[in-house]
Length: 444
Image 1 (cartoon, rainbow, N blue to C red):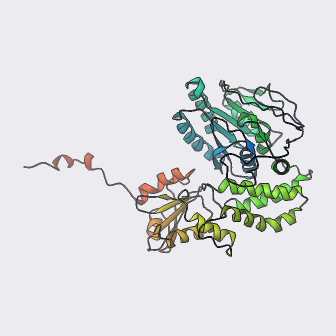
Image 2 (image 1 turned 90 degrees about the vertical axis):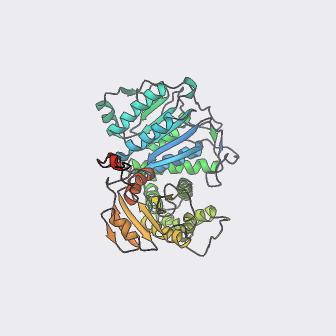
Image 3 (image 1 turned 180 degrees about the vertical axis):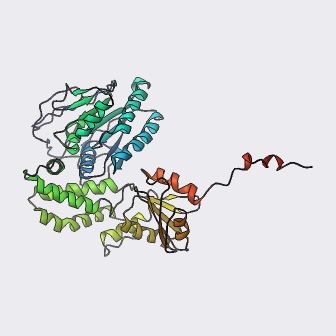
């Protein structure tokens, strides 16, 4: 079995509890280092003063689309080189998302780590846990994957029991419950007393190597964790609660309106914004002061993202500047067979700006954005947006129209493509089953 343990750190006042160590629950304390080396292969950002040892495995994280979910991804990014993050807005979408991951992991030759944070464990997700464990037991010992599930919902305990999974106190982690899947590489941990952001820190040894943080990053991260936990557990009597509310407002104002999910900059932007805001709170800023400075924080991050970017115009707003860069992104759009470019989950204002830039640059004559709730927004410069919308029981203007997916919703861009492509571009009819097919080449 592969073990990942965290050694005690110089100056630490709390011991990291790895899979082979126990420890009593203590107040959060993050060790500091006098200096730090920039992280390997991580873009320059507020998190770039880390010094990680890269584990010989790929780490993928699936997390909830709320402040606690992004707090957990921010913590994970501070300790591990997470290769890909998937955010899930609705618990009902977790099942399809993890099934996609299971298919991918079945075909992966080398061992990987899948980290799931702040996702309520409903019946489809628990079915996935069983299938993952069964798949993993069939792999060669040196190629087995690791699954780390960090949850804090009381309903998850009920669901696990309802699905006849044995759950009890974890003998190695005081205060936590662990579900038994019969696989030592599967860690399903539940802690009702703490939020997922805090759990991602406390259980970091399960998915990350020993890492030294700079003084500033460590202090800002501690402030972030305390504020998110106070808000997520609704601890209104704690001093950090007001800061948590301010972070939550900043998060929802920024998470989808500037750099959308699915773009390579998305998680870096949101994590850097949360860390910068936490730094202001740590320095004594009030919620009102943080709100007034939020535009400045966002603008500063956009300056960093677009440094050296061709065509950037710093006289424009942050959103207008990013729209120009996003319009050139190959990662944000998928070309359909008729040349229509499809994006997924973009904020409506962002889509309006980006789609205009895309078409103005000549990349496409029609663009469609699909929302998770199943609504479609078409934009065009040749009058075909309305034609596209009509195919999805919709309507509108010739160059701006909307419709609805046949399945009612989409859980990912691939799911959206699978629903949109055959409707916009239906395959030719299969005549092989026709009773007249046999006469096609018959000569009398």
